[in-house]
Image (cartoon, rainbow, N blue to C red; front, side, top):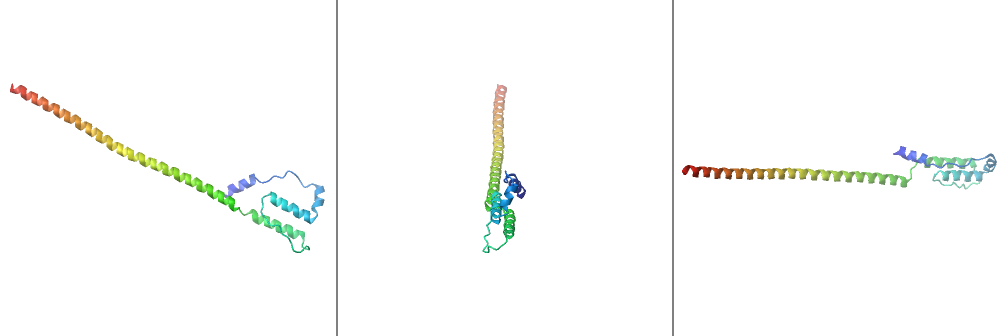
Amino acid sequence: LIVHIEAIRIRHRPKRRYRCLDNKTKRLNNSDERHKRIHSTLVEFGQIHQLLTSADDHEKPQQDINSLVKNMVNEKSKITTQIVHTLVNQQQDTLREIIEDFEEKEKARLEEALLSENGQQQLAIRTFKIQLKKQIERKNLLQTQIEQIKIQKEE
């Protein structure tokens, strides 16, 4: 499951359409510009983080960068609850469908078995009745023949 999530994340990650050219590097020397750049990169890659606002203006910009990168690494390993919720719902739906299909097939199989048992019993009863009727007819026929023979002997 995690492999699939990671594959989807890699497949749909943002692709940069530009490069940081040399003339832009001069602008990036400014700590405020660097901070904005890091923020936009983090937002571009879908990472949730807080911008750390320092109470001290004397704090080094490198510490800000390190803390932002650390937040990015921590947040990268987390999966949002919405993704987990969606995956769990998909699995539940799949399981529910499988269970319903199994129950329908099992019900159909049981009905077929009952029908076949009832059908076999009814078929046996029908054949028995037919054989009984034939035997009764044969018995009656034989009795009439016996009576006719007796009548002929008496004459």
